[in-house]
Length: 391
Image (tube, rainbow, N blue to C red; front, side, top):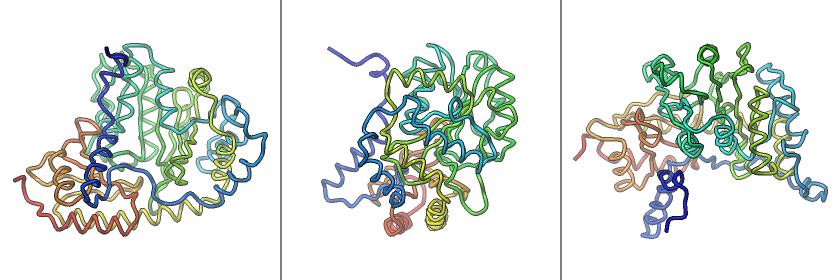
């Protein structure tokens, strides 16, 4: 007898969990594996954030349930951050909602917005959880092609009219996982106008908004005049403040969409532990010097790995954001075959581009979120392999 639902049983296994299983098996054989597959910061959470958590955890009043929408201190900190960083004003009561990480929020937003059979435009290549969440909500994932020749900007007009008519939501993600692509505000101008013309809403995943290099500052979709009419934006403290395990994030923007998500969440959870929310508020109220320091480390790692892949005869654009390199595999290899070669012959895990959609074929994603000495070792191992065609 099968106990899982049809939706669960028909869902492919989460790719990254498969890689972790293979990694464990190799390590049990005594093989030193360097994992450049998962994008989880290796840098420590800043001490001032941990100190605030510790202080608040000692207060008995913080051991009760959080308000369903999150504590006001955190929501106000999010609103203040948007005002200072983007010059966007938000009402912390109606336009900000605390999340147990943005991944949770995005998945619940999809189920809060769509009905069975509704379409959701999903970036291709894009974060695989988008497709999974649409599937679990009985929706239909519709690929939104990203134009490689235009820096992986959305090819809005490549979507067919029937698909546009059945769509209720469009997902965007910049700086992009997996490609590291970045955009200027005019891309969001076009996205908002496109959504209004075709009568659907937009959810922008801005998990990497603060992980940027040099003088580049990632824009917010809410900087577009009238964006709040159709759009929400998801943010996370995981990448910018090295708080992945803390599970703290937020969604901002359209009050009606946030109210729908809040209704789902109030029936599913009771928000995050209050001391974590208050520590998150301390992070957002900081001077962001720790974020700047982290970005300098990631940029140096990016330069190291970019030089390595170029030496191997591979092509990769230097990204302006995220801690990923999106590298074209050598001629004669598929994404999967090249990733397997790296694992089998170099002991280095790379993520095949096909994990992120059909348009990911021919690429691998290389994560920079490992200690610099291990990244250098991985680069050396990769360079030692021949970069010619497939055997």
